[in-house]
Length: 161
Image (cartoon, rainbow, N blue to C red; front, side, top):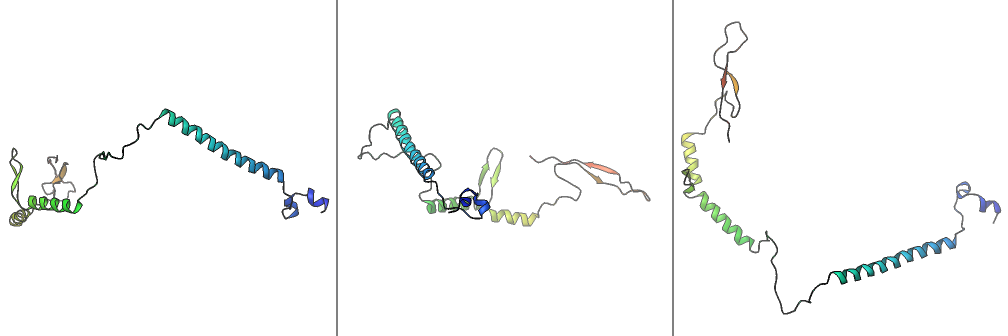
């Protein structure tokens, strides 16, 4: 080979040369092998440390079949039966009479009966100027002729809890 090719950097030549540093390859391979050996030995030391300081206790007997239940909430075992029972309880509550709060004298009536009562009495309608929970200026009298002012009246309503 030409002396000029060996001393010229690869960028100036336009291609990479075929010279390889075998010593650097062996150094890299030795470094990787050293890291692997160091990792294995470190793992052995840590394992022995934990075995010594955290014993597992006596071995489990194969004749003991004691299972501890996991904490609540647990998965449903019989979900279809539980769903059927829940729906029947809800249907019973929706289609029967009963007390919601006996002290406050609040009762529960069937949904069909409640719909009939609402259709007979009509739905509650709010007046046009009323706003629940706020005070609002509502015109109560007609403005004088030729005037653009409105006589305000304050309508106060109770706030809902």
